[in-house]
Length: 326
Image (cartoon, rainbow, N blue to C red):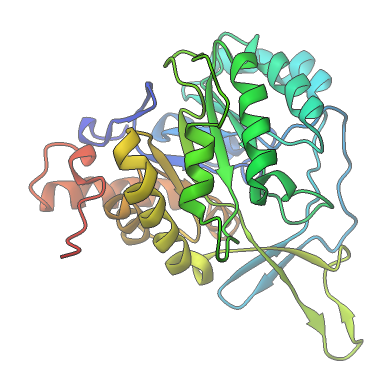
C-alpha cells in the first residue's frame, strides 16, 4: 500500500497516491488487475466510451517508435449501453477510484454518454476526451474555443453528481494558448449556474494532455506504417513538451482558480512523475510505460515516496508547483 504521505486530493476525490492509469492503456476498466495490484494505484481511467460501440481502426494500430509509441486505436470500446450493463457493476467492488473517459463527435454524443455515467453512484469522475488525434474530428472540440465552451457548458449540468475533468490537446500554437483553453474549461463563457459536487460552473480538474498527432512511413513500401495513416505519439519523447504545458496551465489557470491538474505524457520513472508534480500537477497519468512494463506504476509510487521524504515534505501535496523558477 502507498505511504499516507502520497495521499492526493483530486478535486475532492481522495487518491492513495498521485499515480493514475491513463485512458485506453489499462483495458476497458480493471483488466490490468491481472498483472498489477489495483490497491497500489491512485485511480484508473477507463477506455474512452462513446454512444455506440466502436471496433476502432484496423491493424496496424500500435507501433513502437524511437522515444515512444504511435497509436491509432480509433476509440475502440463496447459503447455506453454495454458498458453500463456488463462492466460498470464491477466499479463498486474495486479498491481504487474510477475515472470514466468520454468521447464523442457532437455535443449530443457527449451528453448521452455522460448522463448515463452520472447515474453510477460509485464513479469517481468523468473525463471529457476532447483531444483524440486518431479519429476524424477527434480534436475538433479541443482546439475551438467556442465549441469547447459550449461543450463544457452543456456537460456541467448533466454531471450533477460526478466530478468533471477535461483532457486537453497538446497541439495549441499561437492564440488561443492552452492556458486560455483551460480557462474556458474551468469558467465556460455564458455559464450562469454552478453544478456538480464542487459547485463549479465548469471543469473540476484538467488533464494535460493527450497524444501528439504523428505518423510514420515505411521507406521500403513508401506507405504509412499505421493503417489509419496518422495517429498519436506518446512516450518519453513528448515528456519535456508536456512539462511546459503543465507549467503554463498551472501558472495561468490551475493555481489562481485552485483547479487540480492530471499530467499525462511520457512518464517512465519516478523522476518523470516528480517533475510533473513540481510543474504544478496534482496527479500523474501513466500510459505508454504500461506496455513496456506493467509494474511501472508500483516502481514510480515507491520512488515518489522516497523523494517526498528526501525533500523534507510531510505530504506530496506540499510539492505541487514547487519548482524554483526565479
